[in-house]
Image 1 (cartoon, rainbow, N blue to C red):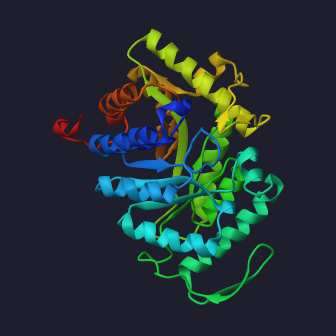
Image 2: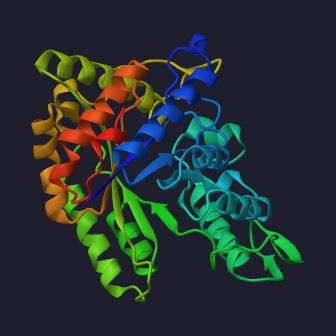
Image 3: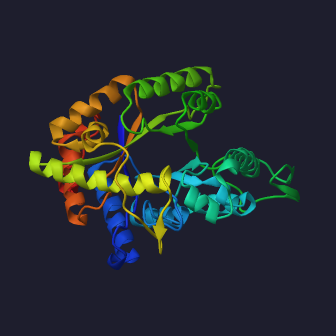
Length: 348
């Protein structure tokens, strides 16, 4: 089981400065490579200070310039917000500059506040996503593509430059619904999912759907993988654990507001609201605890055959504290789930 760090660019204090936020994320990316994490992931969101990254491919290229081996995933790009005729070319250029380390994670959008202010109502996102994906794949695999659909109509054109990798970078789909996971895995897509607030039966159903889809997909050199996303942090003791759980609960209050709540935003800052999930219940689904507690929580994921776990450590804690937690995770947790070893001299 591989591990990835989500560079989720949380920005709860506007006075901190966007430059410092992204500098913190780059520090995490460089440390993640030194510590042996398999990948870092970059999300896409606009107009709000939670998961704040309006230019994921730009950020991916910057990460690639500062690292040499670690994979870089977009998890995820909100496809309906882009014009595929422009975006396909941007993907090709980013894949070239990332030197083949890019994985393109795609989703249809989750925040109504963001989508509607960008001119894409939530009730249109499924149709827009499906057609956008078809157009993107055509542009990355074929030349002289024309289209006559609901959202796209254009005469023959060829995206330039052409992809270095046939069809462009591998694609990972963000899907929650088990049947959606089955359908995407059957088509050969990598999958990113989450059981959200810790519903273990949902997770089992998601894994089963993935396995069914993978078993039915056309064999290839790049078979589907299953990625699970969780908020996580290492704590030295119970007091530190509870402090970090409280911070995560506050973070989820902002997330719930913009995800399924009223979407109250003031000058780009999401209004903090009580989380819909009680703190004790939320704590069960978080990977926050001592190394042994986190190992115990990860063990069922390994048993289920999860290929990759994305850890989101960015929910309002001090930047240096997060770097320390990443090092503790790499040294005390990861060796229980991967056989890869890294020289201590590489650690910071």
